[in-house]
Image 1 (tube, rainbow, N blue to C red):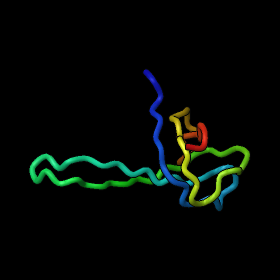
Image 2 (image 1 turned 30 degrees about the vertical axis):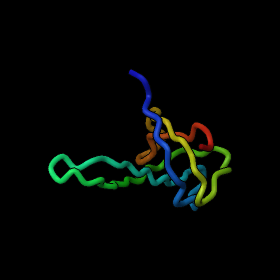
Image 3 (image 1 turned 90 degrees about the horizontal axis):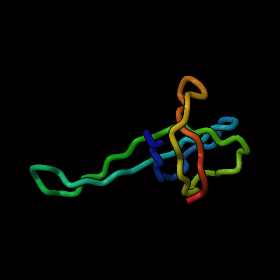
Image 4 (image 1 turned 180 degrees about the vertical axis):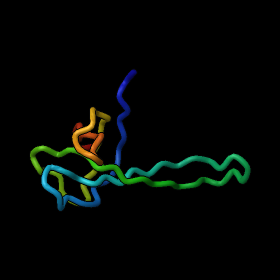
Length: 77
């Protein structure tokens, strides 16, 4: 099964080797036919601490690294 890749914006880089990424998705409401925006935060592994708040990044699923980290940074988007 292929690994999922998501694109989002870094919202926090305060932790060592970890960034928090806000991923927003848009879809049309099935009944109202209005565009709805939903967002979710993911914690991703950033081994070199090179990403800062506001950067656009791509993250990829990986094996669990810690209790909350299941994603790793692929490349800057």
